[in-house]
Image (cartoon, rainbow, N blue to C red):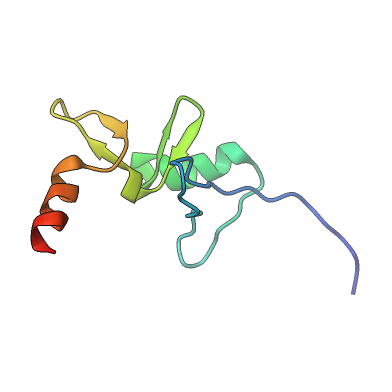
Length: 86
């Protein structure tokens, strides 16, 4: 067995207190950070993560605002509905 090591990249959620990392069930690391962004945050690749202003957010920590723009942060309506159900 050889002792070969190489860097691998994935996305980690930048929302405070979140420790979620990106994976698709089969792969979780890519040869470059840009490749990881393309795989996990590009809507054309069905990416569910948000990559904005150099930060990454898991699906739980971004939402569409009133103008259908992707913005960081949990959806306040979803949070309100969860509180009402409890």
